[in-house]
Length: 113
Length: 115
Image (cartoon, rainbow over all chains, first blue to last red; front, side):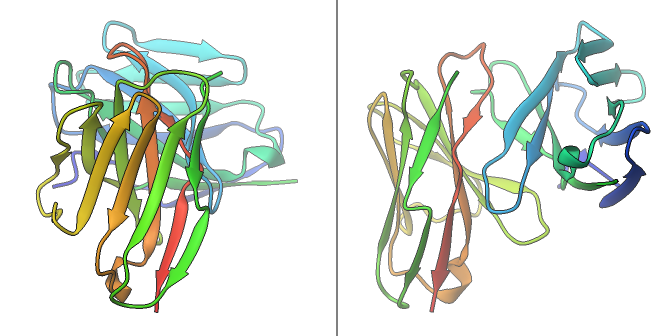
């Protein structure tokens, strides 16, 4: 049962424009959400996170938005750069469960120069 | 920063042999380490969670006798794929966490190919 879903397997964006990656979840117990970036044959690298007490967290070009009522989060990258081309995974965790992360299936972002 | 290494980065082995993958936290002590597996074009699937000095907790469907996990110290966890078969070919990734409040830091992954 996929509790965290990324319905868009791929996304192409022109350099300089905004990239919006979406993620939906089903478990209302999730209280901490993260985005990871992954290049082929490498481990994921942490990008940005947000706890359920916030609805927005910003770090440079990256902003994560959380809509708890809709069980939806999104990652905005602006302006997009060719080096942002990678697979992006969203992940969620439940408190006091050992912090197991539930990952989405990933969205492959291609930023076109 | 928090650096996690894995060794080897890739390995090819014959069917029936055992393969050991090491995961090390290089600049911090990891109270918990996680092992994931990723098949092509699929998500990372958690295999097991290991806490230093105790037995690993395996996810449903993961054979603990086939995937042996040892978390002998606060900086080292090993995953041994015993009697590997071609269907075990995958990308294995470990992650480590310093404290419960912190995020997980991932290793670079180990690509296993079983012939």
